[in-house]
Image (cartoon, rainbow, N blue to C red):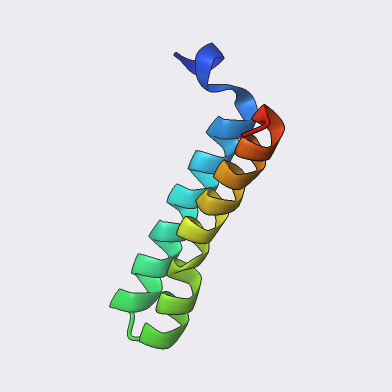
Length: 59
């Protein structure tokens, strides 16, 4: 499964998971505005990766 996923995709998924964990920590520690700002990075990063893959595939 890891070979099919690829190392770049695995890195992006781990990075998104790390971003979500940091955002949760900030939110629970009382810094809600920074947590929301950082929490929005994960879907934005995933969206950019999907967009680049679509351009690469010629769709």
